[in-house]
Structure formats: C-alpha cells, structure tokens
Length: 552
Image (cartoon, rainbow, N blue to C red; front, side, top):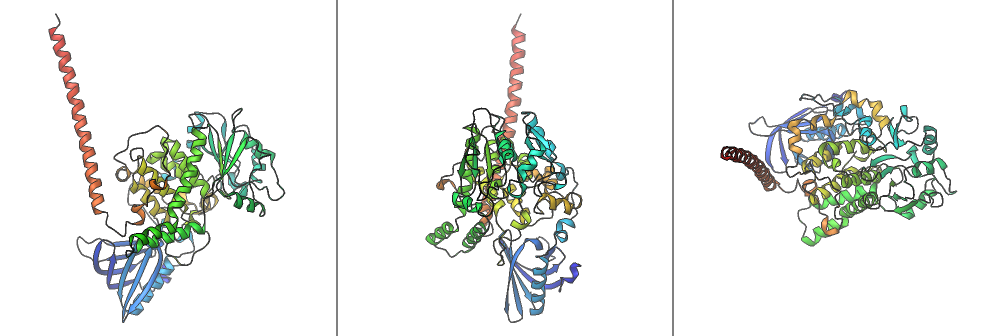
C-alpha cells in the first residue's frame, strides 16, 4: 500500500493552528505518510511536527465554509486546526483518520526513521540476558541460564533464554510450562544479594475445578527456598476472581500441595477498568470550569489514585517479604503480563539501588517489560489508544503509565535517591504511545523477532544514552543511596502527577524557571566546594612546609 493513496489533500494554505501555551499561527499544513506538519515560514516561530500515531481521536466542526478539526493526542494534548474550505477540511480529516489507524506495524514510522545523530551505543544490545545474568551469577550458583525456549518452542511470550533454578532440568521445566497459563512457568525476576531471597514471576497454575497438580511445578518453586524457610505467593487477583478462574481451567496454588508457601491475594484492577479510570481522570483535568468540590469529586470518581495505592501497597508487601522477613516471593495474576510486571518492577525499585539509576532503570524495563520478555507486556494492544478514542477495545489499558506514575510517586518522596528525573519518565510515557523508535512495538518476543525490530528499527536507548541527552534526564539532586527505600502509601502521601495530567492545561514556565535556578545553585555549590578542596590542600602543603622549616 502506498501512503499517497490515503492522502486525499497533501497540502492546504492559510491554516490557523491553536495549541496550548502558543499564540495562534497561520501557515501551510502538509500531510506526509507519518507526520502532520504546519509551518508558518516565519522566523522565531516553532513548527508543528506531529506523528500520526500520536493522534487518538479527531472531531470536526463547520461554520459556513470554514472547517475546524480538533485533534486529541495520546499524550493528552488537544490541538485545533482552522481550515478554509469544507472539502479541504473533510479530506484532511479523512486522511488523518486513515493514517493514524494503520493496521500493519511495518508501516509505522520506526521502520522508516533514520537517525540524525551518531549512534554511539546500540541500545538493542545494551541489556542482553547473558549480561544481566552475570550480575546474579557472581553472587549465587543456585540459578542457571536455560535455552529451553529456543525458537519459542515452550512459550511464545518468553525469550529464548530464561533463568531457572540450577537444580531443575529442562525436561521438568517443560512439564511445568504445561501447568502454567500461556506456558509462563516461574522464572527469576530479582535476586536480593543481601540475603539470597528471590522474586519469581509466572502465569496462574492450571488447577481447574478438579484440583490438578504438577509435582515438577511444586519442586521448581520449592527449589528457591532455604532450609526451614517459608515463601509467599502474591496473587494480584481477589480470592473471588481467582476461584472463578478455576471454572475456566485456571486457578491458584493449593495449600495442601504447597505447604511451605503462604498465599496472599492483593486485588489489582486491569483491562477496561483501568482504561475507564484514565478516561475519567483526563476528562476531569481538561474541564476548567470545576468548582473545588466538583474537581475533588471527579478526581475521586476516577479512582486513579486508588489504583496507584493498590499497586504500591502490593509492591511494598513483596519488598517486605524479601528484605524484612527473608522469604522468597512468587508473583502472578492470571496471565502474568500486567499487574504482575507492575509489582515485580516496583519491588525492585524499592529494594535495588541500581534500578534507581538511569542505566539500571532502562535495564529493568528491558528485563521485565521488553527485550527479555519473561512475561511479555503486550504494548501494541495496551497502548493502541489513549484517553480520547471512542472505539475502545477490551485489550487497551494504561498499565505502563500506571507503573510510571507509581515510580514518580516514589521519586517525589525520595528526590535524592534517583539518578533520573521526572522528564525521563514523561519521555518514556510519550514514546510508549508514539515514537520514531521500535523499542515498544509488538506484543511479545516472538512477534518482535518476526518483525526484525533490531535490524529494521532504532532503539530508544541509543538516543537516550547519548551524553547530550542524558544530561536532560539526570536528577541534579541525586546522591547514591545504597539502602532499601520504603515509600508511604497513605492516601495523604499520594498526589496527582501534574507533569503528565495537567501539563497541557497550565503553564509550567515558573516551575521550569525554578528548576533551572536550582540546577544553577547546585552547580555553583559544586564549583565552590572544588575551590574549598583546592584551598585546603594548599593550606595543608603550607603547614607541612612551615613544619619542615621549623624543625632543626
């Protein structure tokens, strides 16, 4: 298919653009295969370059011969285009709708993008499973790399290489895979070097109504326990939902078969409930006519902060089991692709200082959500639409945005413990929904390999990890903290993430200026500290010289 077939009118003059925080500007609107571009051809006027994939919905209005298109973006921005001529307006709207809903992933911009920067680091090879495993193997010999899933023979959503207990052979792992939803057998997610405890992740066991069991599964997860120790199974479904799953062939671990494990149910919502929560929240944030009571009521009704609290509470529980009770943890819901990933990832941020650095956080996202795909978050399905699209499918859900919001909540409570800043998290949110990079394309590892993303697209990390870009994402307050951090999950401690949800509704000019002033003060302080150190050395040298002269 040629993009030209979808573009009914490629160019329109005298179009007026209205967007947040900028004066209205008149210019020429152009449509390409992947971008909507408006240029006024005036000095000191910023052009608009908008990826079609960032467009969530459009509305059309007409007054006489003047047409107006309201573009609602996946990053929650709203843009208005005033277009002279009804036919031109209809053609532009039709073209935008077609170009923003392409069915084929290979027609998306990452497959056409060519970087304008020098690629110093290939992000596709920055976080290989073998490299990540070396971090564990230096501390323990109880785990091994297994190539059982080569060519995705056992599980489509697992990578070819997985980490399993050293005492469990591949044949036993195959049997366990038939007992877990989607073939997602328990795999290592995190090893706590302080006491050797681990976090594992899997799909639900397929016990069904007959109480089916799998001795190999029992042996596998028991292999992670120390002598005389108990473990915890954290099920991210309510007990009622988990029991209902048995009627569909799923279920949960029976205490009689897993006597050394205590099962805890911590209900975390998923799918359409989260999507509806996001829609309500964005709608409330965009309505500037609310009274205080109305605003607080709308915020509460959205339940967004309630979801944040549920996820953070469960992550803290997992971290407490590991660090304070010295007990290993197995985490799963139904499939192990959504709430499970939120909990395992946040628990690592709480426990592991490396995960709070830029490179470590990138590795965490790759390890838990992307490249290694131990449970494979289906980004293509979950992020197909955002908060404005009317035609909702049941697979869309802001799971990753909720994860980023939880990270921001912890960052806000521990502003000196993270190497990255809020801008880094916002950038990740933007690229999950619309990007020139191929990092978040696809739904599982098998699909990503068939698309040949590593060969045909650029990794987001190749751009992020350039020194010139890293400086923008670095937290000036960062001081390495090698301790576990315990965030508060009290309702009073959780706040609306204004940097995401209110950034198009009110200007951040003064906050940006304050941030710049803070950076300047910190840099000036470093310069003064360096001068103090030089003067101290000079003073010490002078005192040493005087002492030598006085001695006979």
